[in-house]
Length: 156
Image (cartoon, rainbow, N blue to C red):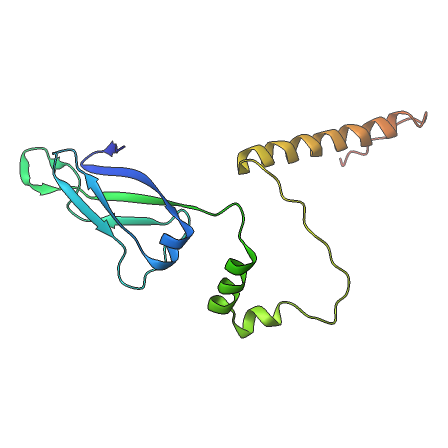
């Protein structure tokens, strides 16, 4: 549950989108056995990947048992996979702003729906790199199949 770096402790905690927006409170069993309650500060929204610091909740410093490191909690916001029409309507009512209205110009008729990639960012980057290399290979093949000589210029 914890990773240690010096006197500091690190952990990752998954929270729901609701908890990220409306707040949360959870109990944590510390390494010394005590129960600790962690909660969001009032009216604080937690972003995905955000790190919260709980001071003095790390390990004691060597030779100074009265002084402790910190606990760093990285939050992973888990988004729902789908929403009902009722939930979407409630979200629009709660979060609608004039700025979001400006982003959707109703006079534009052409609609493009983006293709969503299922997988990690690392997998997507690897796929894009491979596609880029394949495209470079295709360009090289096109040049070599034209039958002409390749001329390279060198500045002297």
